[in-house]
Structure formats: C-alpha cells, structure tokens
Length: 431
Image 1 (cartoon, rainbow, N blue to C red):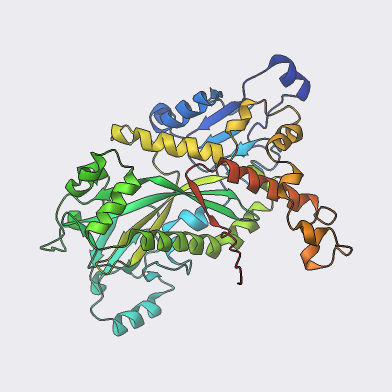
Image 2 (spheres, rainbow, N blue to C red):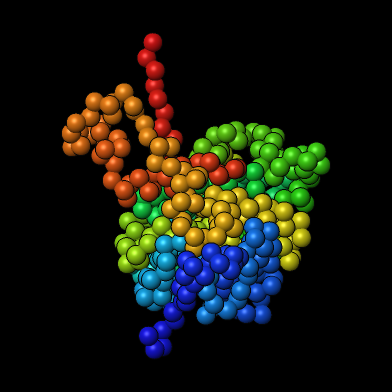
C-alpha cells in the first residue's frame, strides 16, 4: 500500500526450509539506524547464541521481529504474518506505556494524577481537600519532572500532567531510590503475564534527600546519570557475597525495616491491576490481527516506596533499556533477562526449524494429553454444556486447547519467571 509501512512476512516454503536447513532469522529493527549495534547489542548476542541468523533488512524473510520502536505504523502492517512468526511488541501498547494513560488507568498503587484541561475542576477540588499536598509536573512522554506550586501549573497544556508528590520516600543510604522489575506479556487473549525474578534495576539519586530543597531536582528525581545499585554501600555488602540483585535488595529492605515478601506481593498485585485496567483496550486493538498469539512484549515497571513502606507505581516502560554501553556491569542483567524471556515465549525452540511442521514440533513439548485434568469427572461426562465437562477431551475446543498447551509450555520453560496472571489455582483440602 503506497505511503504505508509494510513488513515482509517471509517467502520460505516448507520444502525449502527442510532442504536447506536454514537458520531461523531474527529481524532487528530500530528507526535510529546508527544506534543499532549499541541499543540492540545484547539482543543480537543472545539471539545468535540461540542459533538465529540476524538481519537488519526489513525486506528480508524473518521468523522473529524484534523492534525497538512500535512496528504497527498502520493497522495493515502486521495483519498477515504467518502463524510461526513472533513479534516482540503488542498492538496499541501505549495504553500501558504512555505516562498520561498509565496514571489515569484506575489501577492500584498509582499516586493521584490530573490531566488538563479536562481535570482542572477535579484537581482544584483535590487541592482544597488536601492543602498540604505537593505536586510534580510530568511530561506525557519524557522524563521531565519538576515540583510545581499550584499557582504555577499550566492548566492549558495537553502535553503534561500533574501528580501527587510522595514527599516522604523510603531512603537507602540517605538517598531516594526507585526500582524496576521486568514484566512479560506472553498472551493478549487470554491474558498471561509474568514477572522475571532476581534480575532488576535499582537506581538512586546522587544527592541525599535531606535537608530537602525543592529547587534541587537532583534530590528527588532519578536521572539517567543516577547512581546504580552497586554504588549503594548497603547493597554492596550483599553483592560482595555474590547474592543476586533481588536477594541483595531484599536484604537491604530488611535493613531499613521493610518486609520484602510483602513488598513483592504488592508489586505483583500492582502489575496485575495495571494490566487488567487496560486489558480491554489492548484486546480491542489486537483483534484486527489474524494471529494474536504471535505477539509478546517485555516491559519494565518502575516503583518507589514511602517511609511507611507503601508502594507506588510510577510507569511501565516500553522497550526498557537493554544497552550496557553506559553501565557495563548491567550486561549480565540484560542478557539473563533476554535469556529468560526467549525461553519463556518459546524462541529457544525455534532452532528446530520453525517452518517444518510446527504442530509436530510443538506436540513434542506439549501434547493434548499433558493438559488433561479431572479424570474422575471426565469419565462420566455426557453433556458438554455442563460446566465441569468443559475441560474434558470430548468437550474441549481446539482454540482453548491451543492456549492451554501454550501456557503449559511456558510453565515448563519459565526459569526465573513467576506468573502473576492468571493467578495460581489453590486447592483447599478439608479435614
């Protein structure tokens, strides 16, 4: 279609793949071409270790598309991809990642936020009811954050929003910090999502929080040149003993009086709340694509805590930084996250020729017999309209069976990923 971006969906046929024994191919795409090797360095490394050939040519045949920017320039762009092809972006993910959308989602643990001009009256009422509350002004798309007096707020700007300022943050080594966790959506409908454990990002302000000075942004805003996790004297004590970042962070939280188990419970609930708040919008956009199982995405959810150990969600980052150019010590984090991600979504299995009979290959890992449950019930099921019979082989429809097999493969391959949605089923035994 003239003037619109389209993606090659590949021209290989089954016979060619079986004969030539071609490597599966990943297409790496970033609109800022000079930054390919820096931004996507670790993606390329891990993909090559998994046996992939790498291309930057958007007209090439590909099995996996890894796009740093959104590849959905038009609705038509990826509507005809083949069942075996995978894309690392979800259609219309801006519902999750645009800051103004995120803070207005209605999800839990998000500080009150107001967009102008539509929320002006609500904001002024909130100020009247909470006269001591301070507010930060944020850009919808960038990291510009400033404390603003109510009288200085621009109520006509549609590019910014204001949000309650958490003025008593929990401190580590006297400094404000935020931490980011990696979240993977493996399925849009039905929704399945995971949090990757052990690997995370923790950053600190360069300047101690107290004595507080509103004009010194470096006291309360985490910038790109912020201190990294290994620059915290408290965390360093645990890192020196080769504990993982999360283990060191948990020990550090304990040292300041927090309960890390409770913190992670809150984090998981927060992630689920954000995803469910936008699930309908994402599925509505994805339904235009033939194969919605083709899409997955890695995010980073950022959080802060206050001195009472309450958790606050800041944002969800699309295309979280995976470049160690500025901080080489982060290379192992990014490569372990990618390794876990690729295994979780089944890309590791692509070294076994994605274009051969994929059903045969996938059945080797997860057969229909692996998802059967309740044998005592199913043996006596005669009516598929009965709720308890829906998961029995004679009643289970193929579409649901495929989703269950995908979920089963993820379970086998999850490594350090923990499923946050759907929640784990708990069986209660009565004695």
